[in-house]
Image 1 (cartoon, rainbow, N blue to C red):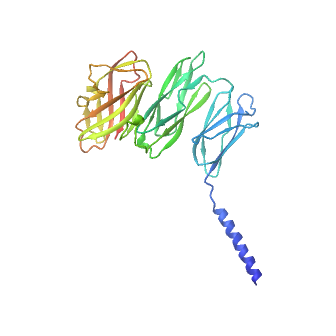
Image 2: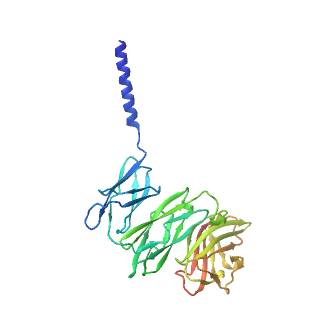
Image 3: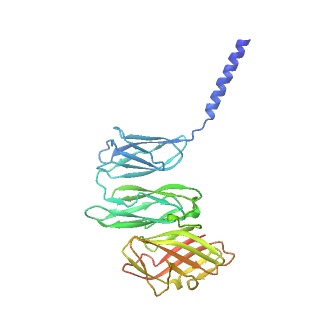
Length: 345
């Protein structure tokens, strides 16, 4: 009888263990791929693979294979490069318990495109940054485009053509009102038969601005007047019925003179109330800007600006839109004649 009891207990234990194993759920995923030559289909050995986010790297074997194991589910970007080939990039979605395909091809040739930055880090209250697409080829123009997937991320312009030896500035904007936690993603520049990622990371909880300036508030989106002009939000402060918001202007083109038409600048709050520029002082540095005075933005030098919107209605929670008008400029003309700020809080 005792022997039967022991056998029965052993069977119960086996059944319990099997049941537990069945209930285990895979929480991680993998990426597995093969890299081949676009011309002859042969495996590409010693191709360098970079995975983002995460910063993991790998090299392809003699059979062109590579893998990344034990990955958290989510969106990843892999970049594959090798001397004598053009860089290629692919977005991959990793699902728990599944193996995602990272098969790629590389085209032979030397790159004509170089990016001034391969990562953009938005800290504090910054909402706008720039990078430059450079054509390092010795002749001919290169057409390019920039693709983004995230709804809080946008670029201006999204495509263009850059002459040999020249560069094109791309403005990258983020909408902080659509971001609730720290996040990292990639935008992809496709040009001249290759694709190159730019990592975009956003910090939401450090509370400070770049260079220690930002103290509070946010700006949902900024539309710059030109791709050569980077606008970065610093802070927003409410003093009584006046709202002050600060930002920096960085000009990457030649030294630039601007005549702002402050009086025709307009603002509207979230309740639909309008405010005219006549009652909105505008400062560049410590100098108040008037319609007849030109403001000079030196090349690659940031200038701190401040706008004060007065007599804001008590019922208003935030400024929905502010359009800062430009009447004329010298020696070069911007793509737009205004700078637009949205959802200033």
